[in-house]
Length: 331
Image (cartoon, rainbow, N blue to C red; front, side, top):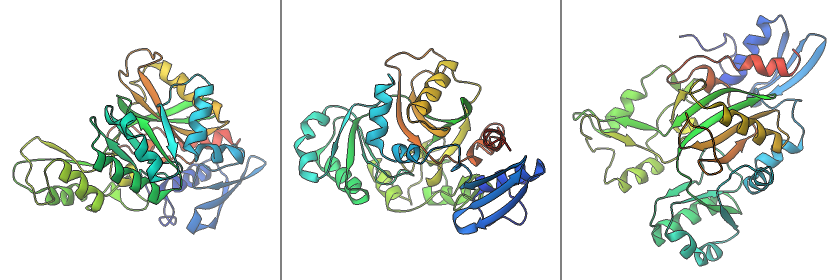
């Protein structure tokens, strides 16, 4: 499978896809700064500047600022009548510690207010142990001055890609994991999965390599495992609690499998923050059923959503989403 654009392999894959599509349309493309994936496209009587494929003139300056602040995002989504997880924000360990009784009996998510890629995020099943809770709070505070502690909404997580006034693609993102065969250790299974040519590093390939870092080691310990453990045949072992593709997660295309009512919710979420290009992360209990006030939750909006994960999913078809970015820009 060929996914790179010759001559631009040093750029993020999403930017490469935009360049390829723009040139296919007869437009001139210049790379202004490869390190920041900054390009200029001239065509159709227009000049457009794009950074990282989805930071464009279509969005206002303030819209990304809203989306990078999870507290503000939740406020605006709730005002628009959309369900978001209940929670509180904290600026220090002692304030969060004082509220532990509120969170002890329910599944809880602890996360920084303004980071991406699952950095500093902890998911704590009920009942929440004090030691685990305080470690999660400390990890989140190490990544940001303000953190959020929220209820754990049930359901599977999906990334809706909104471009313009429509959902263009949907992925179910699965946390980094390996499947036991009763013979190989977890470390060996990771190495084998990383041999897939789709996996690389730095967003220059459709999927990212699985890691063997402290986060993975800690998550395995919670399951009574280590990298040298040999899981039984058919046993699925999660390496991380977060489902980000950037940390080795798998991407499964669900664009044609989700009730259209959820499409409407995703478009409404983007509109609530004034976004024209937006990644909407939504938890859904039943993808085939009609949404209700309580069977879904929007947990985050992403102001710079990756395109390539929708073109080259781990399982599913190429949605060619870069075409919609250029259509939106009038190119």
